[in-house]
Structure formats: C-alpha cells, structure tokens
Length: 157
Image 1 (cartoon, rainbow, N blue to C red):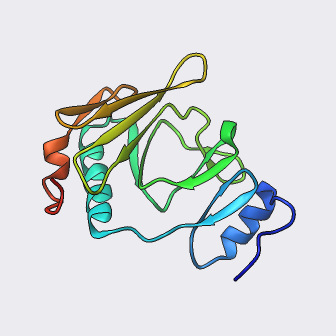
Image 2: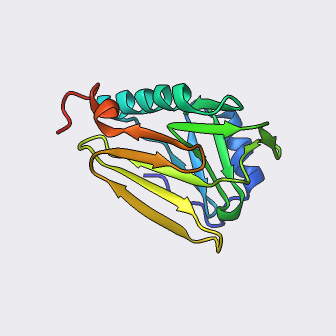
C-alpha cells in the first residue's frame, strides 16, 4: 500500500502531477484524491442535469461537463464537478478557476433528492434540501424539476 506524502503538496506540485496523469485527481488542503468512477445512475443524472441546465441557462452562460477543472480559491480546492455553468468569460489563474463561485447542487443517484448550497453575503453556506418538486438555482434564475431530472434514472425511487 502506498503511503501518504510527509509534507502537503503545493498547488503547483498538484497541477504538475495532474497535467501528466492519465486519470483525474482532485486537490484539497494539500492532498490529492483520485477520482472514483460513478454508477450508471450517477452518469445518467450528471448528463441529464447538464442538458437541463444548458436548455434553461441565460444566453451568456455555458454548461460544461466533468472535464473542466474548477479552482475554488477560498477553499484551496481544485475539483471536477459533474456539471458546471459559467456565465460570462472564463477566468484563468494558471488553470481554470471561478472566483465568483455562488451555488452548487448535490444530486443523489439513488433517490430523488437534490441539495442546493448557496453562498451568503457573510461567506457562509445555506442548504436547501429538495425531495420533490423543483430545485431552484437562484444565481441562474432557473428551476430543475426533479421528476424530469430523475425520469431517465429507472432504478431511483
């Protein structure tokens, strides 16, 4: 079994390793974490969410899949979101980054449930839990109907 490095990695070390790797890894708090594969429902829901967001997002916004690495400056985090929406121009800081990160959704692959986290003015995060109905995405002014999102995931109740 491989051992953890004695010293945390710097962002530059992570990016150097990541650019040469054949598989994706995320970075948080000086540590690299290999990305695990997802279930069929996870893949279906990620694809469906991207399609629903792309259809509803304002014209100045573009929807990206999990190939876009996102840097969250305040958290020192690099991640590959299953789906992301960027409004306006992409911002670069040696790599792709979004300093104005406002909201994110966690879509459960095994049951109809979406958690929405939105950044508040004081920097804290507010959780809104949806187990049905429409999950609203405030910064885009769009809603995702959970029945429509989960219609393509047959093993979800």
